[in-house]
Amino acid sequence: MWGTEWPRYEVIKQDTPKSPPQMVGSVHATDPEHALLLARHVFVRRPSAYALFVAPAEAFFHVTQEGLKGPWSEGLEEGPEEAYWVFAKRSHRRSMVYGDLVGRFLAKGPASAIREALLHAQGVAFWAVPERLVVGTEPKEEVIESWFAPAKDKTYRLQSYYGLVTAKEVEDAP
Amino acid sequence: MVKLRIGYPEDPDYPERLAEFEARIARGEKIEPGDWMPAEYRRQLIRMISQHAHSEWVGMLPEGAWITRAPSLRRKLILLAKVQDEAGHGQYLYHAAETLGVTREEMVEALLSGRAKYSNIFNYPTLTWADVGIIGWLVDGMAIKNQTMLAQCSYGPYSRAMVRICAEETFHHKQGKEAVLLYARGSRKQRQMVQDALNRWWWPTLMMAGPHDTDSPHTPLLLRWGIKTKTNDQIRQEFLNEHVPELLEAGLTPPDPELRYDEKTGNWVHGPIPWDEFWKVINGEGPMNRHRLLARERAHEEGRWVREAMEAHAKRRLAQAAD
Image (cartoon, rainbow over all chains, first blue to last red; front, side):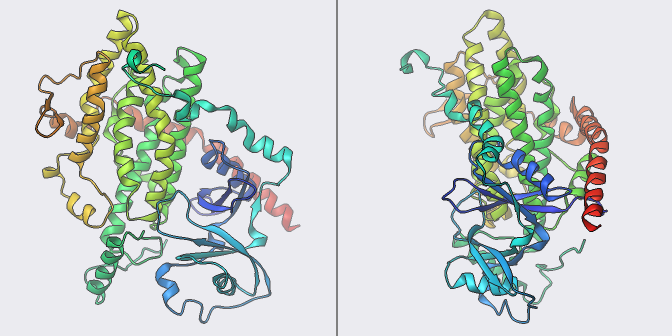
């Protein structure tokens, strides 16, 4: 059906209701629902998620830092107007995420959506994906509870759980 | 798949592009998928990242063997969480390698066919429960030194995977240290068990940092392109300086009669590393090489029906959606 491996889905994670969804990595899955389940296992083993989204990796249009300097959007085909999610890599600082969602833009193609985003947002590289291909967890309380709350009880996954571990227990004991 | 044919020294614009590329690295910029890069940079990264991913996967096996035999529910929960993390770390790294144009399938095939290398340390057996503690404290301790360095890597996806892994791996280190210190001040039998584990894991752990700088042909290029920011010997030294005083404090003795503190440099200096053994194990003659590959192969085969069922389910849903 897909040749030798399942399609790759980009995974987008939103940590809190107020923080932007961020591109965190990818998983191979048979469909978006499967991709979401795998994304939770791979990227949300610790309590740090409010929502997860996935979209087929091949549906992303990408402009690199070098690309932005040239005539990157010339000659690209346009279609009917639709909503795009546009992500920007903000800087070269050390990070565990790559693109922050900078907005939803109505455009006739991904390049137009990024051109629109450039009027509002700064970044060293950009991605755009049609909103109709993005599938996410629902922002309902019961969904958030069932998907992300269990990680909160697993405190032994956090190094803070172990406190100060030292061989000099007598001298250093509080 | 289409293999990229750019970034070779015989390309007419190579010198100019290489100069731009090296200037970007000097400015502290991250190189990203889609950016121009020398073919050799791509090749070295695919080699390192895929080996690293395989190590995370094979690394689940020695510890996984103790999940059913953990001495308490608490220790079992911790070990399960740790092994699950290693699976996740493999996934982050396979993703990073894929951004360079190699497929997941190619990498898995290279591992299962025995062509791919993974960290030598996982070709040793875990004989007692104390090994799980020693692996957490020392083996993960050495891994963290390497991974903290690689978090500074010039290639964006590798650096990001490392930042995420380091954030999670700190708990692996701490739980191991907690367990070892507990046994080191426990009963005579517990002290013997943990000293025996230290004796067996000490040299393989020091070898994890790789051959000495003088015997590491890739290092100068890797440093120049910011793939690595420290040498093998520097990483090994950092590990020794952090861990030796704590091991001694705990009443444990690393099995190296020549281990000494050098007042002048402030470094712990180790005796000769048994490199003959290292090369023997890396070339497939370690105690567990065959066993590890068979276990991976078996897991792959035993999971086949699940993969086929997932695929059939997805196909049916697609067909239903089309009706």
